[in-house]
Length: 161
Image 1 (cartoon, rainbow, N blue to C red):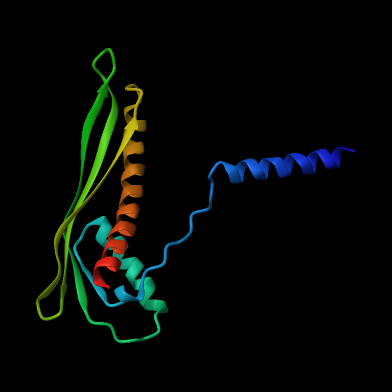
Image 2: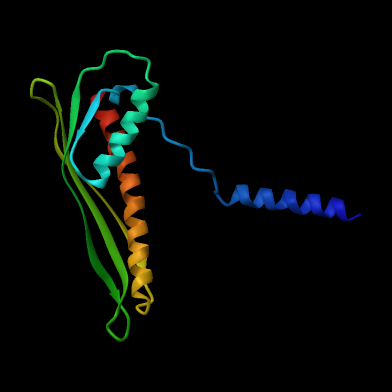
């Protein structure tokens, strides 16, 4: 008698989980248009994009692609206080990530002129746990770099078609 209730509760839990919008994150694939892309820059973003392009080059079909170079001219974070509590302590922060880039083709032809991409996130802190706030900011920064990498590669795919 217990098994039908257990199966019914599992079924209901699965329906609720599906209805809440939870979906597994799918690994984004990079367009073969970017197979010959070289990355110039020494930021965490440049390193991540280099590894994604290297993975694409490892599995590509060997077709000849024109040599293009992505120049990451600047990439950096800034932080602002958004909200103060009654005692004047900061409790809400904004973290902003800005990346300026351009793309040139061999021979010096500019394919994409300098552009600026920005993203920002806000996060809360109780004002008491400084180490917790700093580690949360570090986690947000890592996540923002991954998201910016996807966004930048998508931007390049669209503009280089």
